[in-house]
Image 1 (cartoon, rainbow, N blue to C red):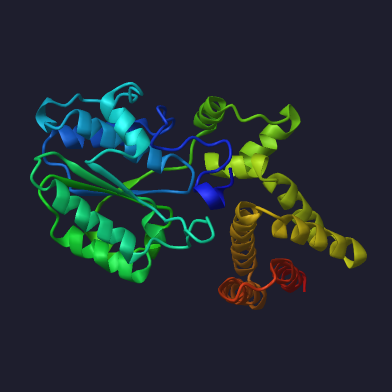
Image 2: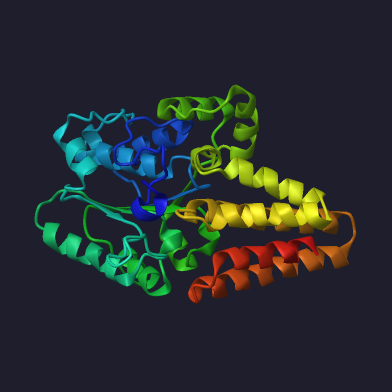
Length: 341
């Protein structure tokens, strides 16, 4: 099943179903201690790169709270969720009356995940709190990720954060917290998660059973940069081949370069290629930013400015192409041509 239709990468385990978390023991310990103290913050901003376990941590903590509603008698550590426990089953099925997971909704017409979390989704939080206000239970909202909130939705969340209901907990996830409204960040306790270590990556990928040729494993782990999601995109979505073609394109010229450009464009404009396309665009942005930094450090300010402007120009070009549903293959060819000039 494709990510654009289900919001989940091929080979991944939905965070609500995931019973294991690797590489974030200190963050778990902090959350457990904070909750047990009875003085924990009502909103935690769990920030860090995509695909390192932020959502899994949020669901584990939510499970911990709902299983131990009295903070003072809660265990000092967060245990792996028991899939057979009623609360775990409710969370896994999305049937918990005390947990609301806000994410980009699926467009009923296209079956694809929308580009943003809308204000209509945030209104569900208000309804959620009003329905459960008399039960005395904890009510937990996971915003996954808050980066996807559009302006109206962000303002609506802010109003709830400013006057949170009693025994309410917000777990706000963010890949890029600098893009969030400063007022949202200021009302959350920040908890920074880092890229997974090589050991944690091995454990996480082993848990998923990700299969890759031995000779490619080291290269994939290096390119994954401590992100399980990135590793899945490299292996299950052709990301490694796309990046290899991109490097060959940059190193070549003439007909050979043109051949690589078409190879990349074909791979990124085929059926169910949205994940690969997003992966490549992210990589391209990183490449241009790094190139600009290298030129700046070398004292070539003109070249640095060129690549900085190119980043902005390509971003605008992609936005327009998406807004008007322009031919993706031609858009990619135009972008690659701009990079190679």
